Length: 196
Image (cartoon, rainbow, N blue to C red):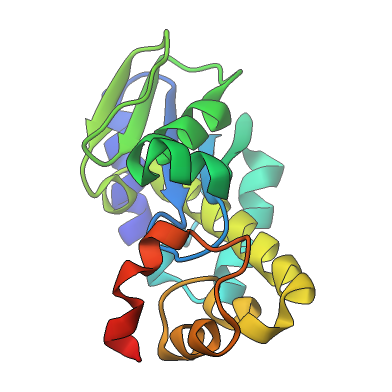
């Protein structure tokens, strides 16, 4: 039912729509990821990635990639996040994800657009409104979760495979115990003493 409403929203626009969303903006570690998806075919179950269990996201990610006209994934590194700030780094990741997308309109989750020669509209809570944006939220989330799981092999002391870099009690305790690594967004850790 939810998926059908999202799909009908995009269909009502009457143009080829690309959805763009990011993952990892609020994380304490690792890059921010973004995805751009053009998906004119209906796939039941697509929804805001945050409303889906991990196994369901992974299943849908495979279906989206098999049926989409375009799937692009872009990232912005920890260094770019530190240099540009998280908002601008997220927009950069979105721009990278959308490069090469063939569409009439880009719908961007949120209130800020990125630089593009394509027509674009910002859609706050777009992952709960637009089918293409919800699909992009799934692709971005699955791609980033896989990256953080791989990062866990290099930094096993932090538990990235479990919390994906977000500020859980376990993660804060690991930072206090081991210090911040070179994949941590160090300016995000200023309030760390509050968790000591």
